[in-house]
Image (cartoon, rainbow, N blue to C red; front, side):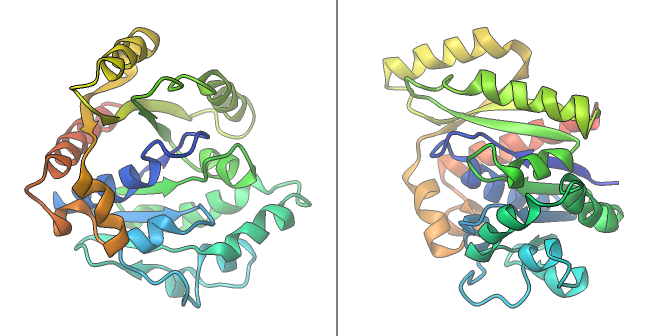
Length: 256
């Protein structure tokens, strides 16, 4: 049975999709079968794994709308052992359509449940908002990985995020837990980044991953080429960091 994880922070620009892309690829590179699910209408998880999001006939939107077939929708990526349910801007319409359904939170869960046994890990990239798509992703997951950027406003909105997770636990998904908090875009030369790191550790304690994702040019470039960091520049500091995160993530989730 696959570990189902949503990568989520309602604050944008924190390395959420970069983490989804490279954590998925790193786990797949270790021989595990991984399914990526792009639950963000921006479709950056899709394009970052090499698919042309502008020319997709089968996407998550069609599945959610009941117009698609799961077998047709799951696509291979350039990375061995890594498949994806892709998305594009069409998914934005789903928020409006789902709002009228009382059981909207079950729709993605039912999709995930239908393929869960085929994968070791399922990684969902949620939008940077607390809208229906994000809530639906959280309702479908075993756990949440929260990327937090090393900047002054890092903790802004975090309490609301945890309130949302508790709400989902108390209503739709009692098994939901926080797998961990990941520091991203860290610059060791920056005193502010060090102060933020200390604050994050003090706030989240043992929930913080030991692995820290550095601010790295190659990491920022890779998605624009439709590649993970491992095919774009496997010798980079970013690649080393995400391989270390994959090891830590696997170890942490196996224990749960």
